[in-house]
Amino acid sequence: MPQISLYIDEKSLKKIESTAEKQHMSTSKWVAHIIRSHIEPIYPPHFEDLFGSIQDHTLALPQAIPFAADATREKI
Image (cartoon, rainbow, N blue to C red; front, side):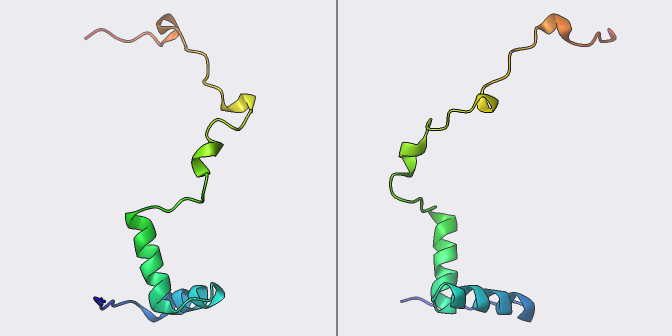
């Protein structure tokens, strides 16, 4: 498998190692997972089924404002 060298500051490395450990992954595997997720986003199974499933009036499109309500503009 190909390898990559990565130069990173100590503070960031500690955060990466800590996060990888919390997810029970090696640092290398965690970094590879993050890179892959940015190249090809991974969504949970049946994620597409959620489209349109929220019934909330605040998500409706606002009424169109008529052009006549626009501010008067100076003619050049």
